[in-house]
Image 1: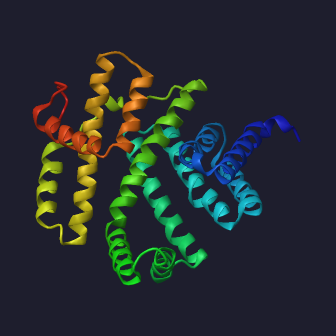
Image 2 (image 1 turned 135 degrees about the vertical axis):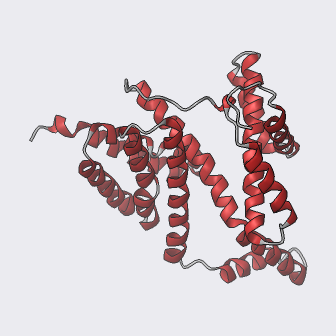
Length: 294
């Protein structure tokens, strides 16, 4: 047996275990790990047959399950393992960059939904238990009845808008998974065509605008409330792309872009401004893009 034939598989396995350990022992790096986790598998798919890749994922799941717990083993299979396997195969099949990006986002949505519902069952989590724990932790400092009413309202709202929250989270994660994976493959010498830069993104103005208006009128309906949240998120993405476009025209300062992205997370008015900017750009085409749909 020539160990060199298994070099890529062993390296991928080592990367997966290392990233899992970082996620487990350094929780504040979890978001970075979520972005990087599928990348070794995406690369392995380009080098090996599907059976060999599946075997690596299964072995990684067994090791992660043994070292870090059952949930982490589960995430290896239906989490980043599934995402990396699908993205890798879509790239390998030569689908267009846009179709690859959309597939990545859809796969992450399915993956995150599976992880949530399966892990909830495994950990025996339920709405009433979480509610009672939250009330008990806060009732010592505040009036118990008021706390219970507040927590109940908040939990009910979260349950109502959970599909939109899941879609937003998965969309961001899927986009980053795609771009980082494609970037890594290009660094490794593979001729991978990237989808357009974020600064050139746009969404169909009629579809987004009509759905925003309709969902605003029907926000009492949970379905339209979730649609409303996701459409505003798309408007935010377009506003963000406009911001990146004008920053690129003024130079390519990584520090400036990083600082503005940081502001988005800590300064609430910034996302609202970007949503408005995105909606205006849909109709007035500030970037003068000739291929932006009417």
